[in-house]
Structure formats: C-alpha cells, structure tokens
Amino acid sequence: MISLRKLHPLIVSCLLAAVCTWASAQSAKPNVIILATGGTIAGAGASASNSATYTAAKVPVEKLIAGLPELGNVANVKGEQVFQIASENMTNEHLMTLGKRVSALVKQADVDGIVITHGTDTLEETAYFLNLVIRTNKPVVLVASMRPSTALSADGALNLLNAVTVAASKDAAGKGVLVAMNDEIQSGRDVSKNVNIKTEAFKSQWGALGMTVEGVNYWFRAPIKRHTQQSEFNIDEMSALASVEIVYSYANVPRVAFDAVSKTGIQAIVHGGPGNGSVADRIVPVLKDIRAQGVQVIRSSRVPDGFVLRNAEQPDDKYDWVVAHDLRPQKARILAAVALTKTNSSKELQRIFWEY
Ligand code: ASP
Image 1 (cartoon, rainbow, N blue to C red):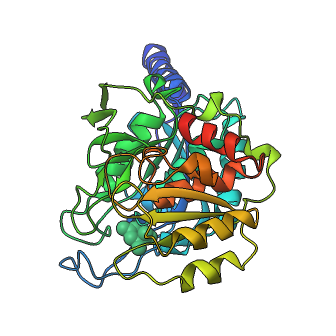
Image 2: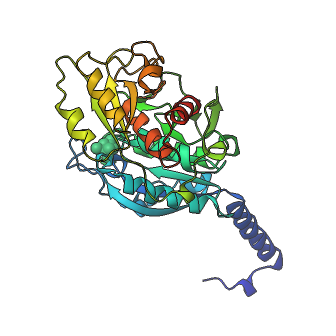
C-alpha cells in the first residue's frame, strides 16, 4: 500500500478529484429497481444446446445482475426477488402482491424506474394489469427471454440491459407500462406472445412503440388508451380482483364448460369466440341465462388481430352484453377483473372497455 502522505500533494488532489467525479457520476445515474418474478430469463438448462428444454425460475436476481456488469453503466441497479415462479403459475394473488410492491416503490423519491423480470407465458397479462392499476408516470418495464441464460445465443442479457435502459430514461415516462423484448419497446396493453419458440415472440397488431439500440431509445408512437397516471383504478385502493373466467368456443362446443364456470360465483364470463366474437346458436341461450343471473357476459375473439364490433355478430344492446374491443380473452379477463372491483354496471363496463 502506498501511503497518501508520501505522494506529491498535486497527485493526491488529482486522485481525490477523480474519486469525486466517479462518485458524482454514480449518484447522477438514475436508480432502477429490478423486481424478479422468475421465468425463462431466470432459467437454467443442462447444456448450452438446450434452448427449449430447461427449468424456468432458477437463477436468483443477484446472480442475474452480477452476470451483467454493463447494467452499472446505465443505472444504479438494485434487485429484489418478489417470487421465483414460471409465469403460467401466476395467480390473482401474485398480481396483487407484485402490483402493491411496484406501487410502493414508484412513490419513493429515490426510485426512477422499475424493471420486472417475468416469464413470457403470462407477461402480457401482468403488463396490462400494472398498466391499469399503478398510478405513476415513472417507467415500469417488463422483460423476459425465450432462451435460458445457459443457452447459446441467450436473449435475456440484452433484453435486460435494454429494459434497464428504458426504465432509466426520462423519455419513457408517461407511456404506460412497457415491455422490452427483442430490441423492441412495446405497450404493455397491446403486446401479446404470438410465437412460442422464437426470440421474436412478442407482437402487437398496432406495432411497437419504439426500439432500443446500443443504449438509445428510438420512439415512433405513443399509447392512446388510458393508463397508469390517468387511470381511474388504483392498486392502493384494491384488496382483491373480481372473479372472472374465460370459456372458449370452437366447432362442436358443448355447454358444459359454460354451465360449470357460471356456478362458481363469478362476476363475469369472457366468451373467447371465433371470428368477430361469434356465439354458436346453441350457446346464445346459455349466455343469456348467465347474464340473467347477474353475471356480466363479455364477448371477445380468439382471433389474434382485429377487434369485436358491438351489435354486429350479436345484439349486445338487447342482451346487455359487453364487447371486449381489441382485447384478447386473457387481457379482457384482466380488465374485467379490475373494473368489477369498482362497478357492476354493464354500461360502465362497456365504457371502460372502450377507454382502456
Ligand atoms: N414457462 C415460462 C414462463 O412463462 C416460459 C418463459 O418464460 O419463456 O415462465
């Protein structure tokens, strides 16, 4: 060890100045919290050639952060393990726990942005849920990967770096909950997992909002539907989600699933119909009976793109049903589960489906 006293005073003051510059650069960087929930981004396979056969939710958040020192160039990053699950195991309770934690963190003055690592399977549902209930303008960004970190050409590291870049950026503020995947920045409302085996897995029929390339965000459009700061919903005022279930239709669909689900005390049923949310003639009376029991009926489409028109395939006004607009069944469930914590009016529910 060289004693500072033996060094020339000029060298000492240069060293101190360098340390001070480094320290102020550190404190000038945005503070980003990574909330880890599991998924493939935290997955591990037996060998580098295992890109699709692996165990999800294995690697703890500290290890993810330690494995990516580049994060430190972008932000002061801290990790928190909220759960360690594959996202097909997400429940309403997980959504509430995660949402409450995000809401608490965004209120802290020393937090500039949040990144949530998540499995790809239900990421779009969590992203939409947070987009509806977190009252903030600070960036909240979900990220995932299609390949585990142990695989050749793993996509998680760059996705995570991009997500932290977005969460640390002032230009990402006020754009709702975002999803950073495959260099793209997507709206959490619009995006869905469209491909289950490629790194280019997430798409929105309305297009990405932008891209992150070499640490810079390039924006091309902004979300128009109500979200986060302008939302009428607030997780701080919610204790549980309303009970909403989905039943799909297909050629030869029997009524058994509709009957079974309607007996479970639900507040709404989402009909995942073909085409423009069409309902088979033999299912129409079943849905009318369900509505007569006070359960909301939401007509959505299992077709990936497009949107359901009110009073087109079915007389929604006459039956007092709601249409899901462009939301796929799994997103319609999330919106109904949030909305029905505040209202049980079908008119209000339809307004909410148009606005969010
Ligand atoms: N089943 C995994 C999950 O959703 C898949 C993934 O993350 O890609 O957690």
